[in-house]
Image 1: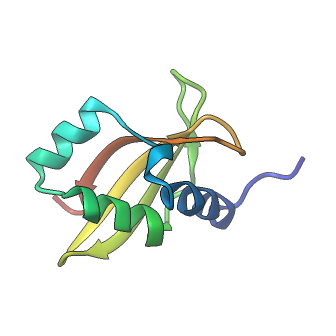
Image 2: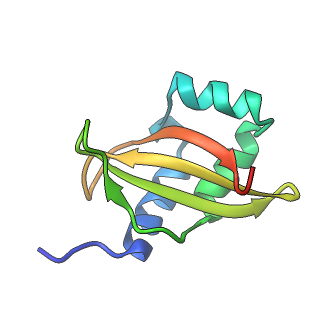
Length: 102
């Protein structure tokens, strides 16, 4: 089995983000989005159109693969961190969102 590239992970996340029912928003992510004034439409835009610059890495606690999608959106460089349970997930878990550089 070949290792997945950043582009492979981007495609998976974009595919899942097309159906909002496949996105799970953690309480932490919702709190951080409110605190940082990142709206749901902005976060969705980042998931649909963002790029992974940093290598995805496994979460030691859960074993999920964590990916950070980044995009300049609504006048700010925004990042959304998602966790995917495997290479063919049925949903993506939004872990947090932040403004890059803040």
